[in-house]
Image (cartoon, rainbow, N blue to C red; front, side, top):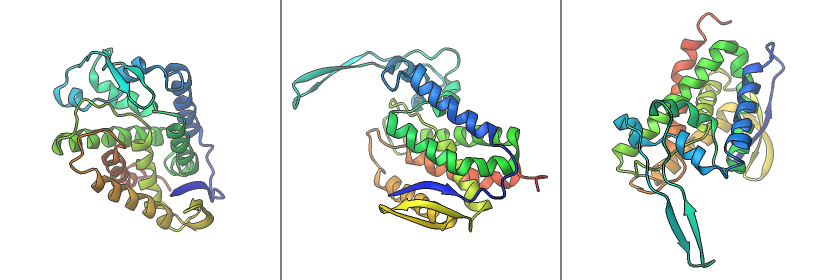
Length: 243
């Protein structure tokens, strides 16, 4: 529906070292630790499980064998794995893991286009803390939304999209009129950031409402919405003292 290509960086004075480092770290984790999505045991050990966050207790479940009648094949699906240390570390680790190539590619493109501008505004250290705080708040939004709506509390969530949503919330507040090159409805065009990111946020709201009452897994729209709102609220605080 909407895919960013680039934006105006003519006013950028700071090399976005942290933004690039975050992108590299996400790719490293996905390729070498998640095995390009094949190492389910690692993924299920470090992803955020809502019930674990609510209870504070590590949950381990048995493997399952699923049968696909179309292909007449059986698939072994690992259960939840032990999490070394506190389960609350998954609020951080989960934002550096992804469910597949399309998942990480889309997230990293959004971060590449919009993250450097926020780092330029905040500086390296503040940007890193801002990114992590937005990611944690996004994950907590998903956890509490899942609990409040009676969703499956044992389905793990992962991905950088919650933290990146915080970056988008900051961007739309700081640079609403900045021109952004996007593919919108399969058409390459240039629109103001408030239009591009406004459409993106509206899609999250509409899609999130569509998942109300769902007890199955899916995209963590509550994390996207929570992260975006956190970014809008926090960016002015983090930008205090920055010209």
